[in-house]
Length: 516
Image (tube, rainbow, N blue to C red; front, side):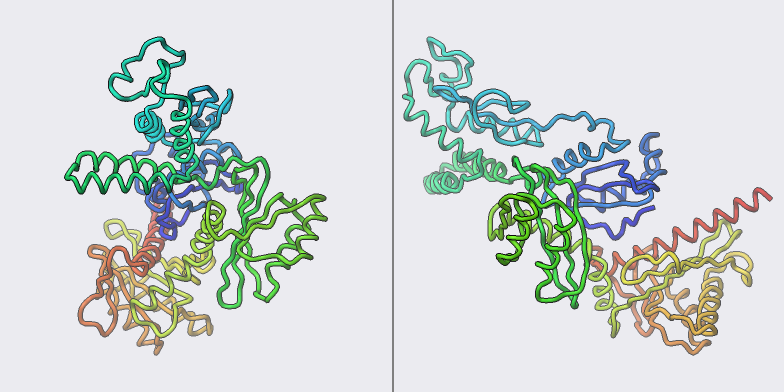
C-alpha cells in the first residue's frame, strides 16, 4: 500500500491516492511518519477511515517547517483537490484574522474575513494562540475595546486594562504610539520591541522582581510566536514559482513549487545531468511549455538573456529574486528540505547502514528473508529486495517450504536461502550486496552455512525481533543500535516488508486450502 518506514519525521501534509492516482485524502501531521504509521497499526479504525485505507494505493507528502504551516497547507490542498474523504474541510472557510480598525482610537478585533475598514493580519490557525495574542495586545498596550465612545470609564480602565481615551485620559498622539507598536508586533517586525522588553526583564530581575520578569518573558515569547510567519499562504495578488536544487554525483536534483496567489498549488521534481548552464537551460525548457509567473525565486542569478526570454514569453515584466534572508529565503529553504527528503533520504539510510555494519561498499542491492506459518501449517518463506534504498517489487520472491515438517524456522531459512542463491548462481544472476535474515544468531548461522556450501561470499546479518539486536558473522556480541539510528530504521523497514510479504502469501495458501 504505502511505505511508512521511509517517511520523514518532519511536520507536513500527506496525500493518500487511489489506484487512479487521484488524491482521496489530505492530512496534516506534526510527525509524518508517526501519523501515517497510526493508520497501519490501529485495529479499531472507524468505518469511514477503514474504507479510506482500503482504497489507498500510494502516498505523497510535503514537508513543512513547522506544525502551523502543516495546518494551513492542509487547508490549501483540500480546497485545491477536493478529496473525497475530506468532507469536513471541503467547505471550510479561511482561518480568522486580527483586524486593526480604522478609527480615531483604533481597536484590535477578531475578523472572520477581510471586510470592513482597517488593516488585517493573519490568518491564524490556532484559535487559542490567536485569542491569546488579542488578549496580549489589549493588555500590554491598554487598548480600548468598546464599540461606542463612553461618557465615563468602564471596568477595564479600573483594572488597568484600558487608558480610557473615551474621557481623554490619553491623547491621540500617545495612543497612536501604542498602535505603531501593535503594528510592529502584528507585522512580524517586533525586534525593537523585543529588545526593549528584554531590557525591562533584566531590570526587574536585577531588582529581584521575578514575578514581573517572568510575566515579561511570557509576553516576549508570545510576540516571538506571532512572528512565526506561515510560508505557504502569504497574502499575494500574483503568482510566483520557487526553484531550488542540490547537486550530487554529477546530477542536478531540482524541485519547483508553484505558488498561485499565495497558495501552494503544485510541486514538480526533476533530475538531470549537471553542466555549468543547467539552471538557465532548465528555465528555458520549463517555461517554454509552462506559464511564466510574475516572480521567480531562485538561489542563483539569471543572465539578461534569460530575463528577456521570460519577459517576452509573458508579455510583461518578470521579477527574478535571489533572497538571502526573510520570508522568501525561508521558502527556498523549505524547497531544499523537500529535495533532501524526496531525493536523498534513501541514499542517506543506505550510507548509514554501510557505516554501522562496517561494509566496504554501500549495499545497493539488499535481499531479506522471512518465514511465516500458523501453528506449524502453511509454512512459507518470503524474500524482498531493496535497490538503492527502495523496494524493488519486481524482484520479490515467495517460497513454499518443501523439505521441512512442522515448525523449524532454522531449517526453513536454510531451505529458502539455498534455493534462492543456487538458482542465481546457476543462472549467473545478479547477487545482492547484503542479505538480511529475520531472526537471531541461529537463523543467521543456518543461512551462512548455505552460502558456504555454494562458495558464495555475500555480506549477511540478521535482526532479532524481540530485542532488535543485529547479529553479524564474526562478532561475539550482537550489535545494538540506538532507536534513533537511521541504519536501524532501514533494517527494520526491510525486515517489516519481508514479514508483510510472507504473511500475505501465508494467508493466500490458507485461503486456497479452505476453498479446496
